Length: 310
Image (cartoon, rainbow, N blue to C red; front, side):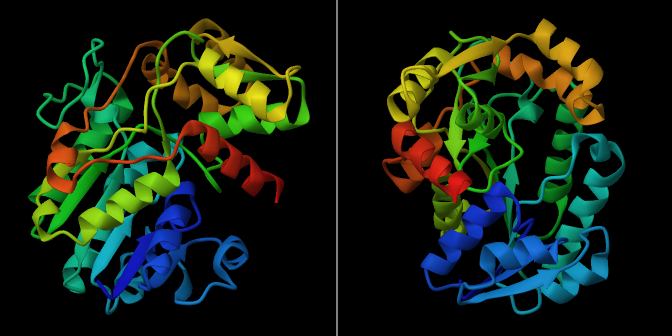
């Protein structure tokens, strides 16, 4: 891979992918809407071409992807736009890869699986989404797999990391950096996975450089499960013993959503993920790539806080 495009480069995972690609000496087209944010993130970075554009405009994606070997689709749009825009943007990204004879690497979440029932989710787990958003993600997956473009899809748990602002962990950290107490969405005693974006990007680029990765889906687990209570202990060590978390249950989340706008109301149906262990199996990935060595939460949280303060 000599040149790649990252669609959604100004987001958390997009930023991590651009950073990982540049660190490997790969030329990158950083594609997103906001020129100011792209310039702030990558304006001083060698090997990055900033390309502002709208993924809803097919021709803009096709033009930006010229000469690219791989297109990374890391764009995330607000929940309330999924019904009207998710399929159209997916189709545009597929066409851009097709027209430029590029491969496609797709960042996806775990919504299409539906409830885990407490079992680890493997790539062979039958997908039975019970939410509207899960069904939309499954349709997106079908579109990609039915296209003629060589592609792979990575299913990730919730993200955290530098520039990953639209995440639950960012919400918690933003509060606790400014206050003594902060909210953690979900029960305090349920094991959860949070993927450090820099780890996720490294794994995606490794897969993108592996011909055998294409034509498949890959579950990419976090370094380990962690509970809210364990995260609280970690934050106390890093930020001071006076720091505390309070735990936002689904009923509390419902009340907050009544007053917080449509984005939070749209997130309500996804709270099942925060209420039960929803853990990905990495067995298939380890057989293909070898042992995975993720960033410990202590280090990942510290680096995320440094980025937020900077």
